[in-house]
Length: 287
Image (cartoon, rainbow, N blue to C red; front, top):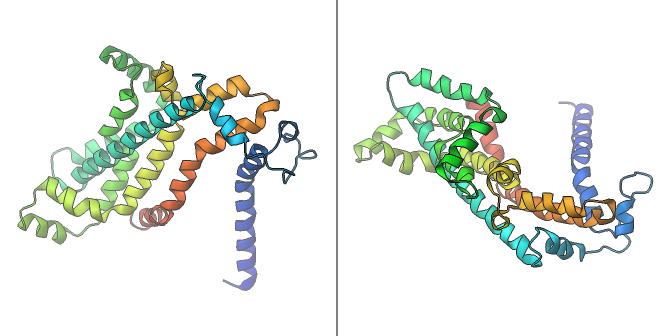
C-alpha cells in the first residue's frame, strides 16, 4: 500500500472514530454542565464544548435520584445489585450451555445431527416479538413472574449464534488431542471441561462480552417480568429517572446517570479487547 493510500485509510478511520465517539463526548460534557448549560446542549450553536466549571456533583445527585425508593443511594445500589446478579448468571449460563451444546454438535456422532443443527440455526430467524407472549404465559404458569428466573434460566439452554461459534471452533481442534485425552481416561464431559474450554478463550470472550452487554442493558425483559421495585434493574431505574426528570432542565443529571449505567460495558470491552478481537479474527479465518 502506497503512502497516499495509507493516509486516506487512516484519515477515514480517524473520521469514523470521531463520528462514533462524538455522542459519548456530548454525554460527558452535558453531564458535567449546569442545568442552564445542559438546556442549551440540544443546539450546535449554543453547545458548550468545554464546561467552564465542571459540575462533578451531578453524578452523586443523579445516583440519588435513580429508582423511586426515595432512600438516596439505596435505590441505585439495589438496582445495581440486581443487575450484577442477573448479568453474572446470564454470562455463566450462556458460556456453559453454548460450549457444551457446541461440543456435542462438533464431536458427537448421532443420527440427525446435521438436521438438528440446521433446525437450531433456523430459530435465529424468529423475531423476539413472536415468542414474547408464549414465554410470558409459560413463566406465569410456573410462578416465575417478579423473579429473575425468566431472565436467567433460558440462557442456561444456549443461544444458537454462540452455539454456532463454539461448534465451529471445536471442529478445528485436532482429533489427536481429543484421542489423547480419552486414552488418559477422560469421557466426553472431561474432554469438554479439561481440553476444549481452556482452548476456546477467544470464543468465550466473545460470548461473555456480548452476553454481558445484552443482559446489562436489557430493558424489555426486566420491564415485563420484574414488577416490584425491589427487583428493578439499572435499565428500568434509568427509564424511571427519565420519566421523572427527563426535561431539559435536568438533562445534565440524566446524562450523568446514563454514563454511570453504561460505564461497566465500556470497561469490560477494553479489558477483554485482545481476546475479543482475536476471536473475531479467528471466526473470520476458520468459520
